[in-house]
Length: 152
Image (cartoon, rainbow, N blue to C red):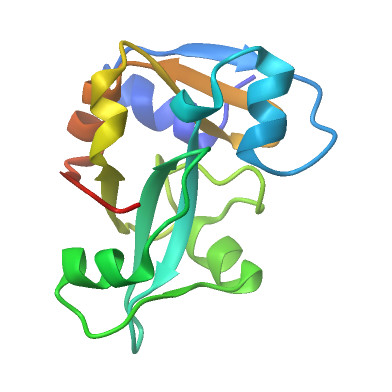
């Protein structure tokens, strides 16, 4: 089973492992329970509106809330707000509940919550509900060339 995210990572020769689960509800907590993987190591990919036509991604541990104030600061804008589902799906080309930061329809700058770097492995969406990628957090950062900062 290949998604755009899987194809994109393979092209960049970034190592990952595909993990499937029965998708019954959206959200990192369900994905963590279904895969038996710790919630704090399960990344949720959030699409954030940064004003005007500008959007970015926040990669957050499943057990933490994004601070929109810190997100705005990370991007050097006055204000950040969660993008609505329609905008998130249009920009990424993925369905909410299956949004991956890899292989997006439109390139978006990503910022990762710094606590994620303390783990050997994290789970992140593969671009389809019920499919996750297990990989080293450093490889997520390298693949996306994203900044790492406190976002919670």
